[in-house]
Image 1 (cartoon, one colour):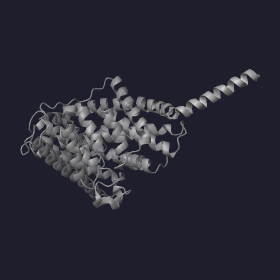
Image 2: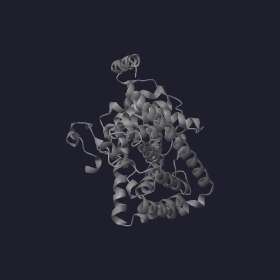
Image 3: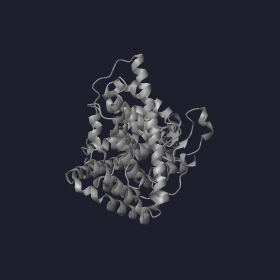
Image 4: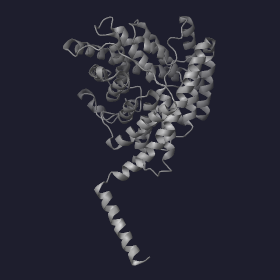
Length: 434
């Protein structure tokens, strides 16, 4: 190398070092943007395929109601699949949260096809379940395969899984901002990892964009009338939030209790969804309606359009708890949307607020209380219903979060900072320890 070349090389190196000292965040931004771009493309595409499959399965089932009779057999087959080949991924969302707290082995990729197949089967044959759990597990399993190629350490792997959760949630519901905050908020109550903010938002936005590129349409909701912000509407919102929080706590407690009953009474796991399937199928045929199975999107839309009866949310809660506690696959979140929206609509019998507004408040507030993610749910309400209802949604989410108590649908969710002084001795504990 000539003297001129050495001088040029030294100057280039000096300028590069000076540039990165001047802008130290650039290497971090560049690295995580590349990773987020891959996560967004893969997870967004996976969510698009999953949503299309789910729409097809729902449409086929609704045109062939007799298929619900085979729900117990379908449950048995899914139970066999997980018992003999999927024990290491059976924990589902809790496995993702556990790996954020204490990273272990890379999440097996088979989690993605297993949960996809299990969820489609659940909906195809008439179980009552959602889609969020599937989207998160698919996203986590796909994204975690990037750990080795990018040579990520344990701390970076935590960020990777948070970003995957954000991408899965944001793309499956079409709410990227809520998805990003959900990923940051869900694993540790009361605290947020700010070093994951950029990857979480980038992954969620890119995943939602990728899903939209596949022309997948998300459900749109509309609140007809939002009252002026005054003392009485605010007071009524607080009362509604209390009801939503109690509902969320009830759902969380009962689903864990019923799950324990299934495990204690039926020792062979593949038989649990058989019994659960028999119960669900029998209830559906006895009621003579498919109103309360699957995602229940038509009923959710109905709750924004008219006042619904009080029993709608109760029946959906029962069918969802039996379905998921027995071992069928899917998520809790869309059923929680159904439960919250129908409860809110029914509360307009007693609370003088528009049923559409109460439905929207319940939609996100019950979810906030059951997952302890009030910030994500506020953003979701604004993204889905518009900023005009933002304050009412925020009141409902915060009150629900506070009144849901020390409960969560996720047993591996940890308490970073307790909701109030009464629970301060529970800091750094997960719900499975309580």
